[in-house]
Image (cartoon, rainbow, N blue to C red; front, side):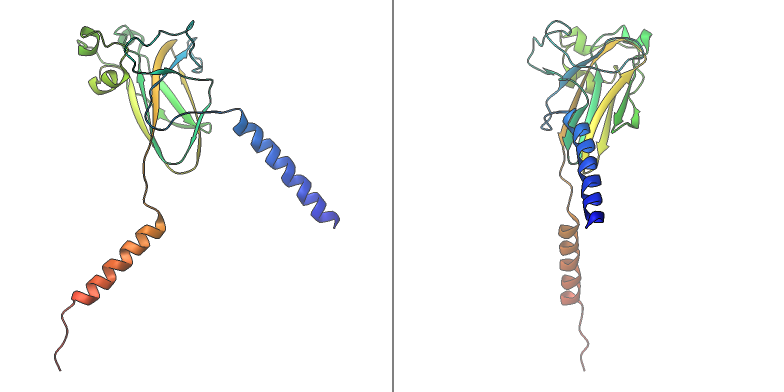
Length: 194
């Protein structure tokens, strides 16, 4: 009886500790909404945006990111792109992306060139910045499970991220699909004549 109480107590403590970690994360939309974040100091970690700390969205392309870590469940593509500042080429703005404190990778190094996004007044359009490829950008495929994303950079810079949920075939569906092919193969196989 005493062992059961000890195990139950240990489980309660474990659940409490794990619960604290998840409770500190801010859930984000996985339907593809862009979120603006900022890295306030060189070598710092990305943080939330507010009307007083980030540029407002004049084109309706994004929302201000809440406090990190940014969390969501399930498989997704997590995209990150730099804010449309051509000066970021000289600063070499690159973002490092982490999931549950595990390094996923870095965004690309920005390249020189004439930005059509900036020329058209779409410097604050993350979709344009991502597709153009002049600005630092990256996309990370995340599998099933709980994700807690953090971002840091060697330079102080604004940026955008979005999480887009993706569908992954379930193992049971794949097994059923495979079984169907086996039956189909047996049914269409030529038969011997005796």
